[in-house]
Every structure is written in structure tokens, then in C-alpha cells.
Picture (cartoon, rainbow, N blue to C red):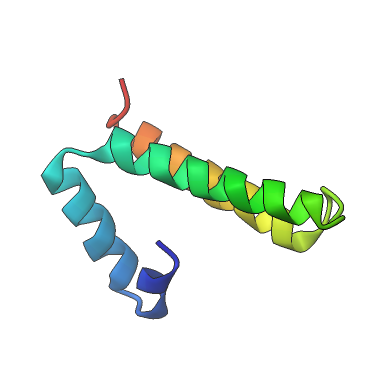
Length: 75
């Protein structure tokens, strides 16, 4: 997900491919798991919940969820 943001057209192509494949919910579940795993690992290391690194994971998932919800992709 993050690697595709290196180029301006990357996110559009990535989400277009996800939508074309019809796997939005599956992709969102993976993103949620990965973000949650990162938060859990950082918390275990003593990183506070208001740390920018944890906030980034929360915002990443929120953005992806909003993107797919807005597009009507989630039931």
C-alpha cells in the first residue's frame, strides 16, 4: 500500500486494480490486520498511543476504509 505512493499515479492505479479484481473487502481486511499488528508491536515496545507512528497506522486504515466506503465498495 505505502510503496505505491512513491509516484503520483501509483495510488490510483493500485486502487483501480483492487476495484477491478473485486477484492475490496479482502484488501481492507489485510490492511486492518497489518495496521493492527504494527500498533500492537509498537505498543509492546512501549510506544505511547499518541505517538505519530501509531497515529499513522490508525490514519492509514481510516483512509482506506473511507475510500472504499465512499466508493460504495463495502456492503
